[in-house]
Length: 286
Image (tube, rainbow, N blue to C red; front, side):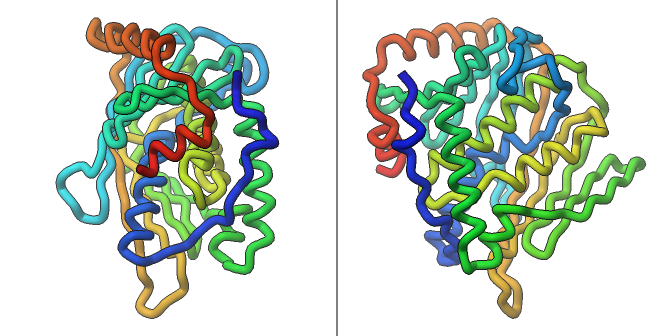
């Protein structure tokens, strides 16, 4: 049974530019940066509270880098199989399974062998309250995150899409077009994953900026092979920036090893100990 929406209480979004704060910002960022490939939403093909479809099987491999580092700070793999999404994050060792029917996330901590569940209704209720709370804060950056606005520029020759604001700037390198089913599946997942991340990281910001980025890419029918994000959460002189970027590779079919991994995950869903979401989230903070 999914966690009741009324039990999920947003905490005040936090802007902390200490080393610890930036590290935590990065941890929260990584959980959703893979969802910023921003593939196209083609209504009616996948679940947005409407009709689900199984769609195609494919895989995304993702790497995230902090600042100018050459080595990836973390990596993940996202497998789409039979209408279900399996997202494998290396650190922490976690799997998030998204089932459009009945509309739920299954969270698996593979180190502690525990699992928790969140319904999409609970996620929606929480994110709405988080957005309302952020809009009432005094910090202008937090208020911006509740209702962000970006200026958009697209260079067709280079495939670079830029969405800029005084607080955040996204630079995305688009590559070609993808099939309608792949585009629709990934857009549905990326939006929901951005939302559920706000529950996994206490003090996280609203997901509205990421949802706007997803919407901006709609008309290009493409996906982002690179995403660069610069954040300036405080107006200081000189400005203190946080720079992150990710790289993404689409494989249009799943390998036998991917199917074995999915089968093992289905077993974990059956045998891992069920816990409340609060207990599960506490395990991530250990």
